[in-house]
Image 1 (cartoon, each protein chain N blue to C red):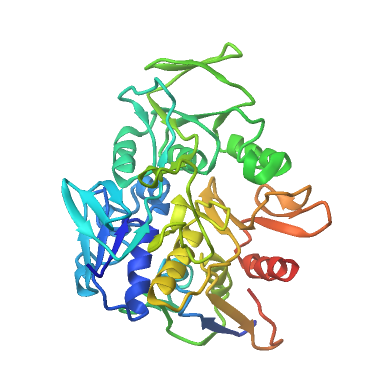
Image 2 (image 1 turned 45 degrees about the vertical axis):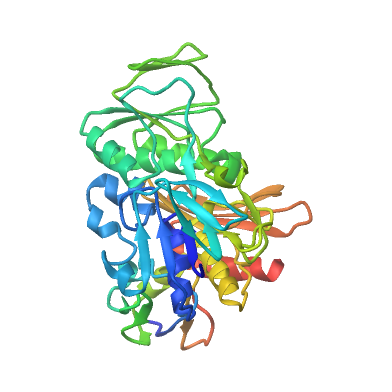
Length: 71
Length: 366
């Protein structure tokens, strides 16, 4: 099982919230309506579709074993 | 008066106001909308809201009342009647409002079929449209959708899920033809048919009565509810433009101090009706007003949820010459390539994890 490192570009985030729907244990919205991480590293594969569903392309996911961008 | 007036309180207008405040702008901001609702998200109107799994309160872009906390004055239910570019005012309900910066984010309105205005004929653009449509669709309702574009497809999908009997009529020979092309369109058509939707493709309408749609091929399709989903027109008449408002990559129009963003804007020669571009263009306009212009150059992106498929497209298929299709109607990747072999767009069906790689591939090829 892979471990993923997740990054959010807060300057791009528009607060649509699709990442919360895909991976509610990893993402939340802060008081300004900007996505924030609850954990920075996770084995939860839902972060891949969370990154893919972000309309702003503001989420990057890296596979920690390979160092490659995974989504 | 020194102040920003934003006409249009949809996503582009609201995001522009937010981006102005996030960027430190301290001037007064007035967000003017012709609808009564506080700024809300439209994507769910054809999907979760229509299905009844999301309610009006779930659609608000930000919590009701929070705009005042940001120092954004909302003027809702207030259509703008006129813009005076020389005196820098807008006319609302007979009263003038002055501006030093004017942002036009008036969006689009649903295109109508001339002469088809019966009480059981619907369009879908606004929350009010969606409320009316939701009330009309029940188990067993015979719904006819004219137009196999994204709005038509999503409403058809939701209505089928509610137990309605759905028929789609489309002049092109495959669904989503303009965007996806015939090969991918046929794949989608097979999926829609498998979900129980009747499709009449490559045919034209001869006549619409309050009870049925008659086609030129002789078919007559009875309906209880008719949805006309034949696209949208930019609401750009305030500036005397009929094909969208031309801007540069920062959202500046030909008029000093006047900007446009979202569906109404012809941003650097291209008008898009995408959530992503509306949001990105709004940020570009805000940065320009603040005096630190950041042009919007993002790759076009949109998504659509229909018949158990999440469709996601990166790029634009304008200028494609052939498509490389991998997968089937349950999960696929369609890569659109131009005559020189350069990828111009990727359409994914139920492959969300491939969006990032597609974005990177297109960015590298651009």
